[in-house]
Amino acid sequence: MAVHHSSQGETYRVRPRRRWGRRVLVTLLVLLAVCAAVLVVVDRVAVAVAERVIADQVRREMTKQEISSASPEVAVGGFPFLTQVLGGRYESVSIVLRDVQGPAEGRTVRVPELAVRVHGIAASIRTLRSGQGRIVAESVEGAATVSYGTVATFIDKEGLSLFEQDGRLAVTAPLDVLGQRVTVRGTAELTVEGNEVAIGFAELTADGLPANPTAQALVSAYARQISVRMPLPELPYGLEIRQVRAAPEGLSVTVSARNVLLNPVI
Image 1 (spheres, rainbow, N blue to C red):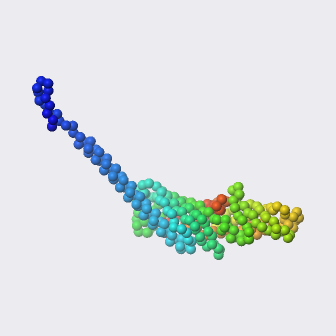
Image 2: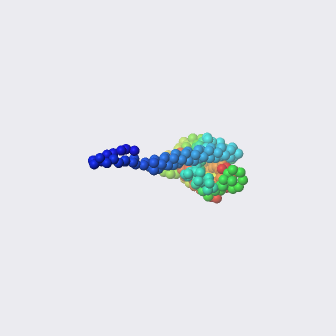
């Protein structure tokens, strides 16, 4: 405690300001920040564990269906994750499968990428711990790309080339017409029929085609030959094909399902 003297010779003491209140506040703020950081780390660790478990289960389910792919890429959505665990409801799970290959009617269908997003998952802690009970998702949506090389194997015509043109599936192919070699070209109508994609070439044209009914009949017959129904492998989660369109890298297939029972996949 400091001692001071006044101009009149009087002596008085000056007490130092008490700063313990401010120090306590600072300490509490530091502790809160540390606790928050620890909780974030724990939350992210829990997410990493969940993603690894889901990836392992998806891999096992695909093996049962004789489907192979690169390692599943899983991302659990929503933050914080631990509150979702306690509430028994998860915002979303995204699963990406690359280089997918599976059997379909004696052929191998190759899908460069299959991306699936699961929304609104209901699963209690008891169900997750015991493995007993239902794990249900409000909706499952997915998008897959089927390479044009795979589509061409179903058509099985030598020299045929498939590609996207102005948002449509286009084709060029060599054809012998009345002793003359021509290149036919045209676009297809794509429709969904169950678990199959129907590819229909209604009209084909060719430069230098002889102008007679026989030549046109041969071209029309070829159009029917390359119009096929392409089956896809059995899809997980009860997904059904909703739409198909031509994209630069292949046929883009949109799939979805609602009120999906996920056990034992997740």
